[in-house]
Length: 329
Image 1 (cartoon, rainbow, N blue to C red):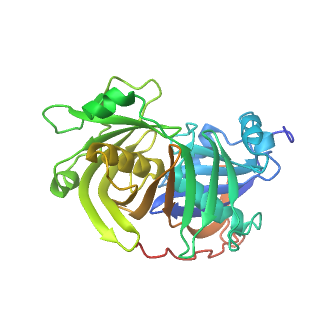
Image 2 (image 1 turned 60 degrees about the horizontal axis):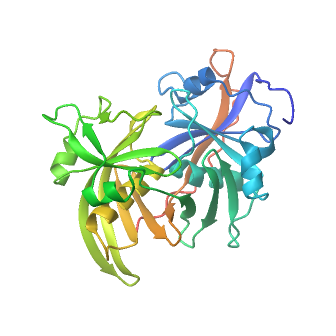
């Protein structure tokens, strides 16, 4: 540990989002901030706080117990993405969050990705490596992924059942693990997707021991591009510990990988995934790894009072750090 945990009177923050999956980001370069579940809930509250799907703390990997494994995997992963869901629970990682974390690290002058450099980010799901593409998108090597049900589940197309509020019966689903758990369900068409009631948490059987994110997807087929065949998927997601969000980075990877498996041999390695918050690109890499690419936007900065009172508007220092989101392909 690098020092005694402490909580200041005011907490500087930056608000950011990746395809409208939004986060409160806080810099803790000395590893001294006590990021409690209560503080996370207060920051994420959309009525009395800043409002976000989750909170990301940038801290030295050496300051966290989980950082030892990260540094053993890659000593260059000196910065750790300490990610918490909006309900205060600790999460393994977040694909949209990793991209926004990289943009935050650039804002803090901890890294310069404009020259093609790679940022190694420590997470509870291992080291994730980020590069900035020419179009301004951030591409993340999300690392290894698996179908927990194995070859039998892929052959059957399912290893779970999902019931959504309003459905008469549960439907088959395929589990995908990207360091955090996902369960993917295929729907017939876009109308059915739009009419889903995700105000109530979907029920999954067998019950996942640590919960799961549920992706509802509509395969949209394939299209030919200058770079070859590209698949397309439309998706909505109910995130564990949050509820429905406009995007989930690991969820888009899970959706693309499940649809790719259902499509069978010869299906594309590259998929565009349309979510309510925009579009991202998912690419299956050699060696059982997967890449996620998409925009990362830093919207504004400010200071959050930690004594329960209202901020002094005269003392608030805010900065417009928005770079805008590059257009989807």
